[in-house]
Length: 116
Image (cartoon, rainbow, N blue to C red; front, side, top):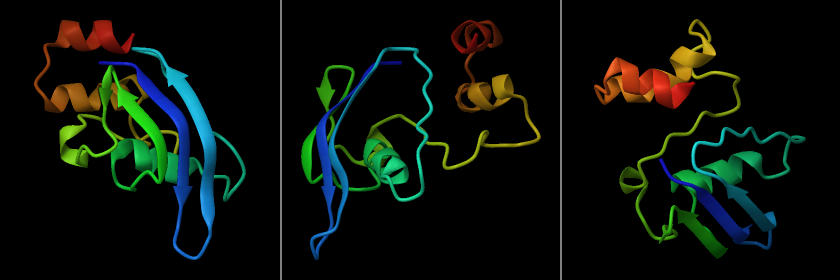
């Protein structure tokens, strides 16, 4: 895992629509956060930029100490949960957070340590 740093991030669409303006956020390694806000405030756009699904218009996005603005989504090694409290509602929060680690065949004791 690594920290995440968004520095002065902007998302501007053709036609003059600006979805995200000067967004700065530091997320420490192993820190768990949730983005909340009213509809249309840029939450989903910000998550899509972090995941690499949306191009960043201005600013810098770091995963750890690596600038990833131009890194393809498949090479970022992160996942995104979109507008729902859990990826799989029938699973516990622990199981949802552990799901990606289980898919990577991470040992159970390591999963427990990292999720808790």
